[in-house]
Amino acid sequence: MTTQHSINGSRLLRQLNTLADIGRTDTNACCRLALTDEDKQGRDLIVRWMKELGMEISIDPIGNIFGVRAGSRPELAPVMTGSHIDTVRTGGAYDGNYGVLGGLEVVATLNDAQHTTERSLVVGVFTNEEGARFAPDMLGSLVYVGGMTIEDALNVKAIDGAVLGDELKRIGYYGNSALGIHKPHAFVELHIEQGPLLDIEGIKIGAVENLQGISWQELTIVGQSNHAGTTPMYLRHDAGYAASAISHFVRELTRSMGGNQVGTVGHVVLTPNLINVIAARATITVDLRNTDEALLQQAERALNDFLKSLAESEGVTITSRQLARFEPVTFDAALADRIAYHAGNMNLSHRRMTSGAGHDAQMLARICPTAMIFVPSVGGISHNPAEHTDPADLIAGANVLLATLTELAH
Ligand code: HGY
Ligand code: MN
Ligand code: MN
Image 1 (cartoon, rainbow, N blue to C red):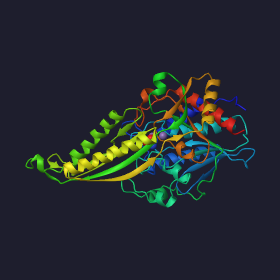
Image 2: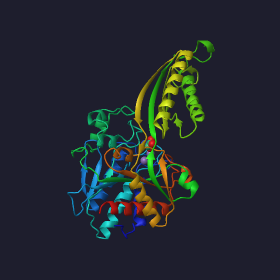
Image 3: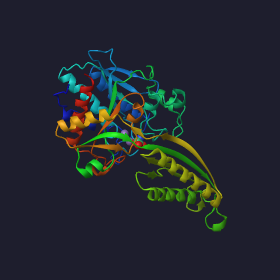
Image 4: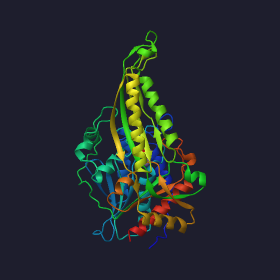
C-alpha cells in the first residue's frame, strides 16, 4: 500500500532550524558533542516533541531514545527510522538531525491524516553517532545491536577525559529500558549525503545500498624534547616531525592505492607545542576507509609497516590504539529498491549509491533489513557550518521516507 500523504514541509524546516540553534557557535556551527549540556538540550527538545506527538518514549542504558507511534497490530515487529542529534564540533544543521526530525515529521503527518499503520512506527535517536568526543562512532547503535557491551561503553573515556557513563548520568539520560527493546521489522535512515555525488549529478534521491569500512587509530609518538637551536639534526628524536611524516604518508598511500581509499589525519596534539622546543610527544588520529575490506586491511598493513620504519629512523616510539574498526556493510537490496521506486513514483531523479560516512544504519543492518535515503549536500560539504541542502530536497527526502515507512508498516 503506498501512502497518498505529503509531509508538512514548513513544519519540518522550522524544526530543523530550531534544533540547529541549540549549540550554535560564533562561527555559526552547530556544536552538540555527545553527552554535553548542548546534547542534553537537544535531547530534551526531541523528547518534548515526541510527547507532543503522543509517542510512547523509552530511553535505554546507553541513552538511546525511542519514540513509538502505536500501530493497530502492536504484536507485529515495528518499523524503525531515526539517526542521531550529536554533532562534531563544527557541525552543520542537517547531519543526523534531518533523519530524526524526518522521522518525527512522518509521525506528525500520519497523525494529521489520522492514518493508523498496522505495524508501530519507532523513531530512534542514537547516542554518540559521531564518535568525535567518545570513540568509537555509532557507539549507541553498536551497543543497541549487541556489538559492544554496555559496561565497556559506559567506561569509554572522552578526548577531554570525561567518562561516558558519568556524563550520561549527569545529563539524565542513563535510561532503564531494556537494551534492544525494539526488534525492528526494518530500519530506514534518512540522511544528507555529506558527499558531492548527488549534487554534481543533479540527482535528488540516493537509494543507499552499501557503506564503506572504517578504521580509526590513535597514535602516540614519544620522542625527546630538546632545544630547537642547539640540537643538531642528526641527534633529534622529533615527535612533531614524525607526526607530519605520518600525515604525508597517509596522503601518499591514498594516492598510490587510488580507488575508494581515503585517509585523514584529523587530530594532532604536540607536547610541549612551543616554537623553540623539539616536540617530545605527539598524539594523532588516522581515519582510513574503503568500500573493500581486503583493501582496507592492505592500507592498515602499509601504515603499520611505515610506522615501524619511521620509529626506527627517527628514534621515537610509536604506539597505536584502535578507536573504531567496522567492516563495509551491504544494505538490503529489496529495501533500496523500494526507496528507488517511491522516489520514481514522485518523479524524483534517483540513483543507487554507497555511503562514504558511517551511520547508525550500518549497525541496525546487523539485526534487520536496512537501507538509507540520501538527499544532496550542496558542494558535498559536511562536518562544516556551511553544510546545506536545499529546502525542496529536504522535503522530497522526507516524502520518500514517509512513503517507504508507510508501505513497510502495512
Ligand atoms: O565518521 C563518520 O563517518 C560519521 O560522521 N560518524
Ligand atoms: Mn550523521
Ligand atoms: Mn557526522
